Length: 261
Image 1 (spheres, rainbow, N blue to C red):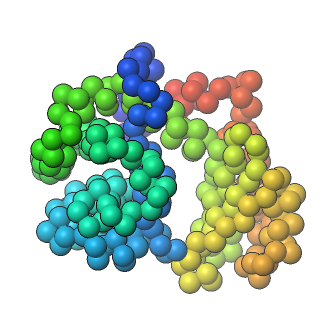
Image 2: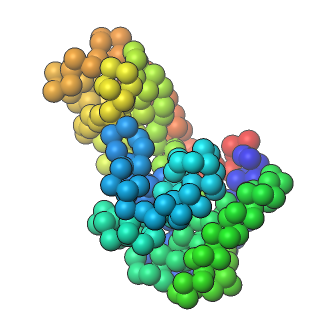
Image 3: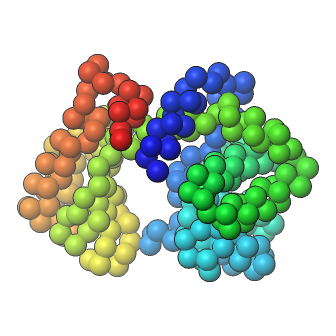
């Protein structure tokens, strides 16, 4: 799978985009996050608003065939009758106009089709082809337009995902699953964590520097969630964030991506 992604990156950087910057492909993980509850699952209000037949069709695309457990499934459901009317403002801004939404969602499905074909999963390819037809049958875009949009914009999506992964590291602290993310623009740090001791609720601590973050963990509202060993772990892991390990002047993000094997 990694080799496939590398090949896509290598080919896509040779393509010149014919679309504006606001018409790039959808970052599915970021988009889907607007529809999740504190437990990391799709919020009940969106499940309840969806037509049951549509829900079942989309849920069958991947993961557990009876639940929406992938970012692509959540994104597709968000643009269906009932759900689209109550979608978060931030999500609607990411999708844009009906035509832009059709291009972005269609391209996301098309990208999955390419991967599934490579893996030889014929049944899953068929399910996704059906979903792509549902999108194009609405009349806002054609299959050819979706394919052109995909070819022209895949490199922007890959760059965004690589930058996102380049700036974070995941690990465990005590009973928590944790992720430490560094904002590459201003250097601020966000610790997200959750587990048994938080009733599976995801909590966040954000600060402008590592020392400020450790101080917030030690003295902040959620200080009971952390031990002194947890603070030591966060300090150690902060130094292992790829963007920190490999400075931009030594190995730019795009080059780093191409070296992954």
